[in-house]
Image (cartoon, rainbow, N blue to C red; front, side, top):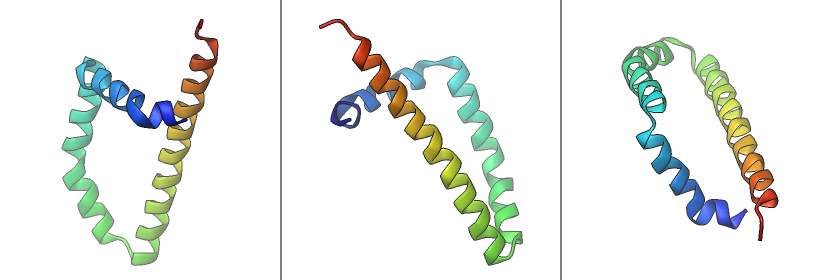
Length: 79
């Protein structure tokens, strides 16, 4: 996993930065952020914490799947 952490993750980020679809998704997210922040502030602290935890877990699961896919790809590389 150190290969992923020590460079390949950065390479993936660089590729995503050049991908038009990914850039469009990032633009859409930036547009939604002010409303999202207002939405969070309107929630009770308990609901805000719940939502934040839920989003963190879904994001972490996606990241773990990315790392698993990287390991699968790495194991299939020819020496």
